[in-house]
Amino acid sequence: MFKALQKPRVVYLGLSLELYQTAMASYMERWGKVFDCWCQQLSQLAEIVYSRTCYTESDMAEAVAGFAGLAPDAIVMSPLSYTASLTSVPYVQDCGIPIILWSTQFADRINDDYLPDDLNMNHTVQGTQDITNVLFQRGVDFAVVTGHYQDEASNARLADCLIAARAARLARKIRTVSLGGMFKGMGDFEFDAAQATRQWGPEFFSATIDEFREEFMASDDHELEELRQQDLDIYEIAPGLSRETHLESLRGYLALRGLLKKYQADAFTMNFLNLIKEPRCPVLPFFAINRLMAEGMGYAGEGDALRAALMAHLRQLAGMANFTEIYTVDFKRDIMLMSHMQECNPAFARRDRKIKLRHHDFWAPGVPPYCGMYFTLEPGETTLVTLTCDGKGGFRYIAFTGTIQDAELFPNYDRPYWLLHSQNNVSELLDRYSLAGGTHHLIALPGNQLAKLKRLAFWQKFDFYDIT
Image (cartoon, rainbow, N blue to C red; front, side, top):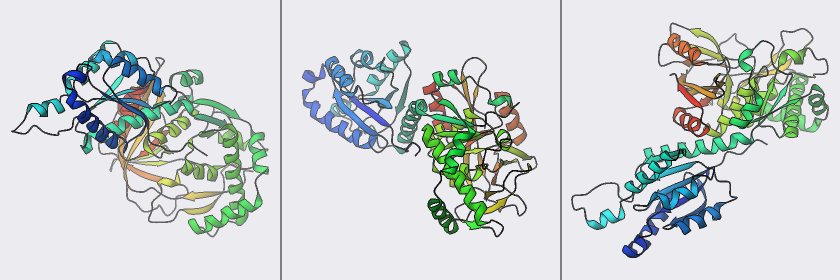
């Protein structure tokens, strides 16, 4: 139901010089074979939707006409030899598509028996610099990645650049739906939705309790029982969880899934305070939220639509994403307890133990019990991110890395959680986070995603603060 994770879609152009078609005609075929090698390497990182070599302005004009309407995520250009910038730049500068110079060459070293032929086959750097200077002078945003085409480190940088370009484009297709409005008084949720749509891309919608209830009542009993039987195999079921409570929570899952499908939504947020006051609301869909996050839904609690959209957005950057919040600090060990009411993406759960499903009573009177999850996360490095309005009409990413601790479950706790260790002094980290404008909701990503986030911020013209 949610957007599939796919390779970036790119146009790839190999550039040379019109003069060389006559002055170095014997190299045309050889440079073409080099370009084929580079295409094979690039295809490991991206789907190449259009490619060709260009020696002349008419070649470039034909290329731009050839990929018009293909909606690529980026235009990648590689000089095959020296290439004059004005042969290519005027044709791509106004395309509105991210431009990436992949500056590479066929040889990876200069040998002692270097020959004029080696120079002719590997003189690409000057063309890159001609192009990048003109792009710079003309105020055109571009990225450049330099390195041998078989070098793993430079190819990883190229992959980051391509993935970030794709994520930036897909932000304009994100749809976020809210249920129950925003938690009154939580000011760090406030933002100008029209500005966010205009500068960033996501759209924001509100659903009604009646729409949710309609989906709830329409759920199929046979499908519910099938889902429950699947849960019995997948999860560890606590003795106190009744069949009825489990089924009602699954009914909430089908209802929320149906509501998101109705709105073609990628992200969801709810304000539980308003939902528990509404007698027509049949269930608090915590169980549904966790299941749908694992399927790819973006989420943030309490009506935080901006961070819900951010989670959906960053899933396209990192492959998966999670919603969280810093609750308690261990100042002695530089550790933070990360948790929320119930919401946590089970796709991040430890792989060496089953997630527990338990009976949960809600603290407010009159609210029906629900099926809750209990787990902690797979240990390893993680990146925490938020996005905030910067107070000057723009947006700012704030990010830091840490390590998910390898720890046993608390025997007496009642919701998903994890322990985040800061590599530096946690007090100073939290100072930096607040001074940079950090919000109390965060999105967690697997591994170290700082390089991709920096690239993403560049394409979007957002500020980027690494406060690690």
